[in-house]
Image (cartoon, rainbow, N blue to C red; front, side):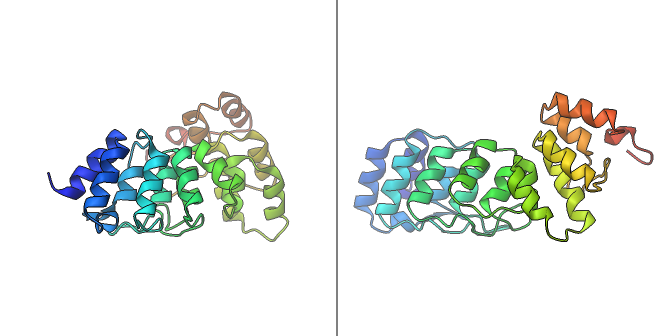
Length: 232
């Protein structure tokens, strides 16, 4: 087995002792790549939550790994993006403690931040932890996470109707009825279909298991995508 592959296997197994030995034997290993990924990307790769993840991060960073290294390919996500996408809060904290850029761009979601990944993929523990650690929030984030004070602050400005509707969809995706009600009162489109998937706000609430919110949407005329006129 090649040394980077052996290191990746040790990371997935949580074998920190073997990883530390391999790094000592090969000083360049900490910055080596397995294709488009670094070893820190391996540490945060789906499904995440590998044994001893925070210790693995510490060992790699101490050996010279770049905590803000970029994936090379269709996107430029950092290891923090991947930890957020896996809801791996312990590794997320370890990366931030090691100096990871909490607002790094490059996500698969519109080139955005780790918080964009976390909210889009419904990784709620990671999303809230990023906010706690100081991540920059937008109207979308506030709506999706039900952060009402921040939502009201965002809406104090002149917000285009399209952004209000998008945030409304996000609130339903996040199961946040108070935020959804606030945005519907501000003129959100109740049955909007986003460009990224054919799901109405009601569909998004149902998928999220937000039964009360789904019933509330139904009572106000909310429909699923298959119930809308036009092609399915």
